[in-house]
Image 1 (spheres, rainbow, N blue to C red):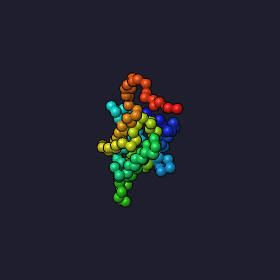
Image 2: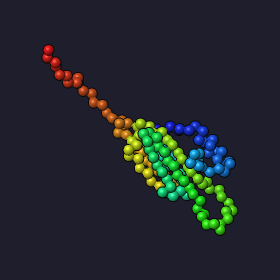
Image 3: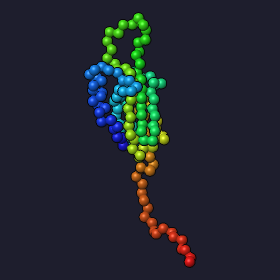
Image 4: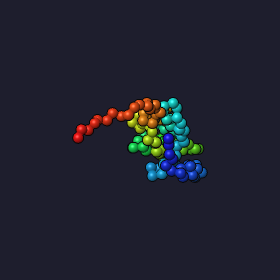
Length: 144
């Protein structure tokens, strides 16, 4: 149901972890995710711990789903001297190509405990259905 758009995403993520760089608008960091089918819905769960709900942006254009988020520093006082900073900050983004069998008009999103959960219903046209066996189709006779 999903296609990865960037085969080098994991290499970028690993390089960012090793160098300690943060995501920028031009080169955002990856966000871990799970994707699975649950009944008649496709579910995507993205880890965004410490990100405020209003700092998450979800867009869908045709079959391209884009999730962007920004985690800002929690310490804002000038007199604070940071001793250790291991939590990644900056811009995070994920793009997914959704199959035509998903109903992008009815996507729902929930954000709880640092996990963004998107639910995408399976489109009616993609669900299995029975085809009745019938007689010949009616044809109008053409008089000449």
